[in-house]
Image (cartoon, rainbow, N blue to C red; front, side):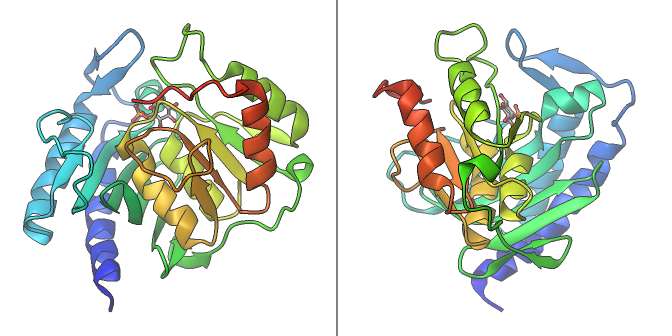
Length: 273
Ligand code: LIP
């Protein structure tokens, strides 16, 4: 058993437990508060993160944890190349709050900003993805690989629109329009972690988004790499989860997808966190 697979086993247990807790509030009246104009947090985001943090302290003592809801309480300096775990207690909180099944618990292990391993559990879909870079990826325990779609025209892609890009000049709509016109179809389902897991298991052929948080990206990016795919930023540099801009693919459509995004942006820097 490698060290990474020991991590994945522990994270799988914890993600399942947190997912079952979150399902107690699914399509039930839950307390919802606003973190921004359209950015929500529910009592189940908070309960899930509390459970995960407590379980991690027991199972992986000393591992630094950066959680969405505790953001700011634990700041890890950029450039610190230590191991850390990024926790999204409910990725796709807006979906969860509206009773839409596309939400997940996402636990991503990184060294600095580099993804190493991840577990993503979507309890309402009864899907659990897990894996580690160099050790393969799994969907409900079965080995999975990225797809073999060779051209952008034959590709099913996905993207998302961050809470704070809505109404801003740089809102990913022009990118959506051009990619949509060049691929088979684009999906927008509202949870980056699940979008990336669906690239890893070959459902989607490509995904892009910017203005994301490290906890939205860490686990899914590790799974795409573990499944033989490619993840980068918009300039094709190796992904640093702190930068918040990601392009992920089955490798074969990476260049045409990135070039299409670059065509829209014409050198305009991608907004980062
Ligand atoms: C969400 C991401 C989604 C993005 C949203 C938000 P949250 O994360 O999964 O892809 O478009 O803006 O960042 O807030 O539900 O954890």
